[in-house]
Image 1 (cartoon, rainbow, N blue to C red):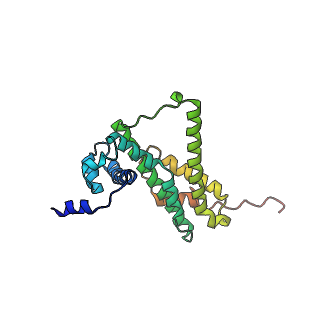
Image 2: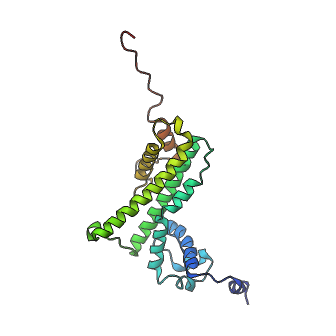
Image 3: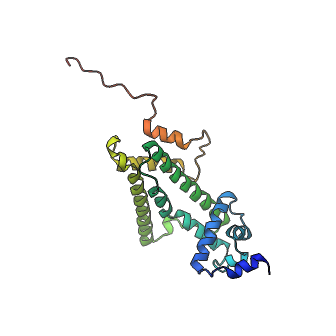
Length: 222
């Protein structure tokens, strides 16, 4: 008996949900790197399991790809990462961490969504084809996801609330609007110039001018 076979026999039996989660975690980086052409054999090797084990957790590759998309679309992962940002770090470093966290999540989600779309695994329904109840549920889900993300970003800036020109809620709104707009489509490659995380953080902190505007000139008679 080979060591691999002995290892498999000694390995604890996993539940279907645990097996699905393990396969999804292994598949997502491969989807980002390779795209829809990734094979279930490649995924199995990355997960350290046999290929047939995948099909004891998923009906087929399309179901696996759809599960990957659902996983990366869950805002809970990025919220958890934002909550882990150390509040004692200087404000510029926290801002960079926020941008990097949101950027990484957006690029990962965009890459997986694109791979799933190209593979034909998930065909999103159009807004027009949904019932009013389904549209309401979708809108509520999106609003809830954004609210949790917004609250997490605002909490990162809360320690410096007194030093900010705007309330932390407004700062969070602006940061999210800028970063999410740049990442629309899953990439920050604008086709014109590369926008770095540090460069964007500096722009948000200091604006677009090279120096602070001069104070207003005193009016006559002052």
